[in-house]
Length: 372
Image 1 (tube, rainbow, N blue to C red):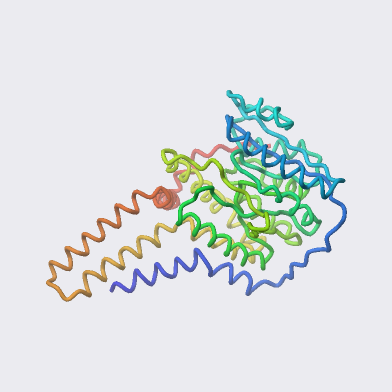
Image 2 (image 1 turned 45 degrees about the vertical axis):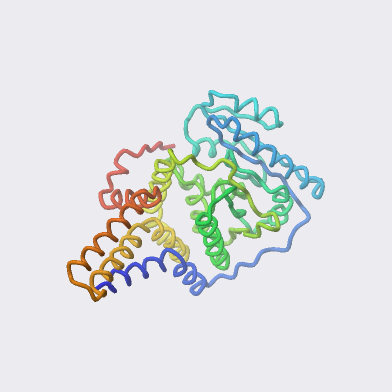
């Protein structure tokens, strides 16, 4: 009996990891051929939305300016501007931005999504980059990315690392990088990390207009997903060569006291696109739908964890050659300890929360929609 939940957990784990990226490659009928690199370097606006980011913004702008200087020494005909969107800031964020020569635009919308949309509409550059305050660039990043800013590419995403990360965090991000490299073989991933993303502006504007009217909570999933579905002729590149400079670092990870609420917001943002966009993706581009199912199953990974724990508890109850009461006691003790460990995990609680919201759909009754 213990094999049944274990088997279910294994299947769900494969669905959340390797199954759908491999299926996407297997059933892909497209050959993603990038054009030859051009000598024209064009222009780039680096867009940084901020709400009271004093301190975190300074380190970000320092690293970007170093990267711009190196890129300009190689590609002298390029134009690389930094634009900071100040959204209802009440601290010294604006002074930090001006200190490092960034252009500033002020808003009072209290929405990262709205600020990004308005900054994109104001931009006239060929490419734009979305950058989170607190992100630190490798100084070689911009120099390395520029040659890939060509018409056949809609999005370029560098790998992501957390400074002073623990062992589990490093393993997770390396695994995620490996899976995204598989998705690169099929036109690119449908989600990237929002710390830094480079977009071809006209392609981005097309996507933003197609999903206008709603405030989306996870731009780093919604936009790449719709790029893959609406503009399949263009590729999304996930650049995982961190040793070669295709990397950004998170210098200001979330404090533990806000980790739970932050993870819940991210989980709800993922649930938003699952309910609102996934049926549309199925109709528009079944191939992209297949790849996106990995994100879908990853959202509900709490079910996988529960199945594995239940399987282990049943194994203890059924397999040890002791008295029945002793086996049951050991099984109950293991189940209790495992439950405590899972419940203490902010990630598990967020996944469990979104499972409950999926079944009830209560979380979207109060969603704010603003129509154009």
